[in-house]
Amino acid sequence: MSINHSSAVVLTDVSFAWPDGTAALEHLSAAFELGRTGLIGRNGSGKSTLLGLIAGELTPTTGSIGLTGEVGYLPQQLALRAGVSVAELLGIRERIEALHAIESGSTSAHWFDVLGDDWDVEARARVQLDLLGMTTVGLDRHIETLSGGEIMLAALAGLRLGSPDIVLLDEPTNDLDRQTRQQLYEMITGWRGTLIVVSHDTTLLDLMDDIAELRAGSLTVFGGSYSQYCAHVDQQQAAAQQALRTAEQNLKTEQRQRIEAQTKLARRRRYANTDFENRRKPKMIMKQRKTEAQVSAGKLRTELDEKIASAHDAVQEQAERVRRDDRIRIELPDTEVAAGRRLAELRDAYGHGFVLQGPKRFALTGRNGVGKTRLVETLIHPRVVSAGEPMAASSTGRIGFLPQRLDHLDDDLTLMEAVRRGAPHARPADIRANLARFLFRGDVVERRIGALSGGERFRAALAVILLADPPPELLVLDEPTNNLDLASVNELVDALASYRGGLIVVSHDEGFLVRLGIDTWITLERDGRLR
Image (cartoon, rainbow, N blue to C red; front, top):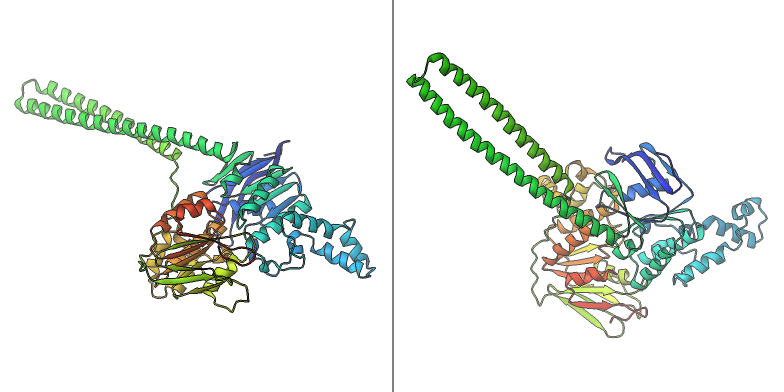
């Protein structure tokens, strides 16, 4: 496949396999056009892998990737890069070091070569951070001291500084509060160049020029926004369902006609045998008629078999056009917590507090960087809080915690080993059966946690929590919809609907929170107040 004038990225027979031999993509040929493209697909379909290949962070096993310019890449798991400074995240660390060395009096040619003509790099970086509301974040700060939203904003500022021709964004609205998301939407609307975005944010996807769906190893591109794409798919699937029903009815008709024909043939055969036994006609004529009847019956059976086979093929053809995606079948533990049972308390230094009792549901919201994650982490890892700082305390040791960064799992453990840590007495066969409900089947359960995609890592973390023995009485979820495809978000909502323990959810996804049936909405302000 050759690159035409409108193609920014061209994939030619691209395959990729992980070190353990697991195929992520096989013989994929496709093209991304200039403009904004939303890349969608089920978790584990290979979206993040595809972005990594385009960015050059992964190398195809076979095939080639053609690009029309420089690539800028914002990966999904930024928060896992411990020890990285903001300057490094912005892609300017070496130039900042060179600038400071020269300002300190160094005359080394090395520093001048590194800096080049970019004498205002620090000032430009500061402008970009300030525009995104990160006025107090220094360039030398390590990203593990930032919130997930602040990390994402800093990375976006770096892309604006670099101005690459092709920009790849993997779930860019993860961890962003309402105001910051709006900033991102405005940024995307005015974007120049080529943009490929993986996201479950439908508002963001509706800003795209094209939607590309990665499904069953193929990439299909639809010209239009996500809403238009959904309308197209719905119409397509309605037609496919109707065609399938028609094909199935035709198959039933052919099967019924075959039964009727077989009944008639059997009746004729009985009559012929009776005539032969009674010798109503000459023996030679009787044998001839019997042979003719057998030949005719054979032809009829062949014709009927061919019609049924054709009807079967039609059913199969139409069935393949109907989407039948695997679904996570989460069955939360039956932990009926008494209504008066005290599970947790959230309190600030101004006398405001909230007590979670029984199967109640708290939503904790607030701007990026106000300390929501730090507050809920105190439930799991108690610490001494500073004056004026909000506090959290639990009254149960049975807490299931899903952190925002999903960095609590040991990357060197297999999925099977990670689950067994929380349920040491469970039989391996039972663990395998339960993991299948989370779409981990076969040899995948022996794959290392570090080799999982963002969506797979989320499902793994959820499985570790929910398959623990004993099960949790309190679930604490920090931005649980990050890294989930749209179908999986729906499934998580359905699963949590049956949970009878306490629930605390930190999220910027208001639509998700509304669907959870939250009892108490709590906002953490910048001054540490809980309202």
